[in-house]
Image (cartoon, rainbow, N blue to C red; front, side):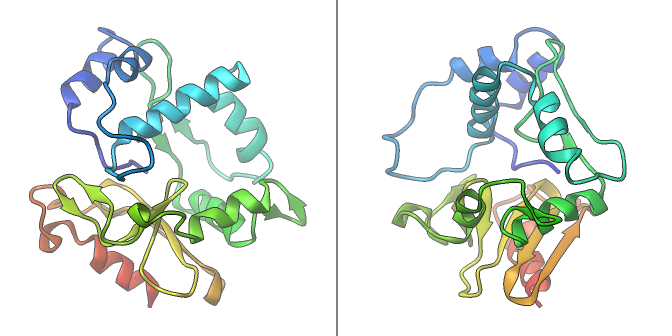
Length: 216
């Protein structure tokens, strides 16, 4: 599932072609605003998280994820990260997983980080996406592209403006993993919308339409 892509795709292509690394790209982006003041969705932020994770653990993200997440979840099918020529994972949108296995990640979150009774991810971390921590993260306050997005944002998950605790991982072209604890439901959709991104209009992008469908 991919994230919304960040604007300068030619620099992303440069990494895939071996002209520079993702790390070099991220380190070359100047700050745009004071931290905690606005939320402008940018996939480069997710790539930066991957950099931090790699430095903190001292190993490739894919190795750490396989050992600590994919294996405990008993993933049924092979999965992989797209990487650049340098071997660095394209964290911003290069994880390829089947729908059934994406559902296992959603179910882990629905069960507050537990898998077969074992606390795989701390409950405090898993519950964070369901709460808006600051006003600039609330629904219709987050900027995506050139418009205000219908959903709030928290810890890489999107939060609809409902009161039942549901949240979604939303990919480009309307892929999503939607988790609704109130109905004990996890829904995965990997089909693509060919009109996605051709404009800023909901009639093309259908983010709200897709999440409305998942919520019912």
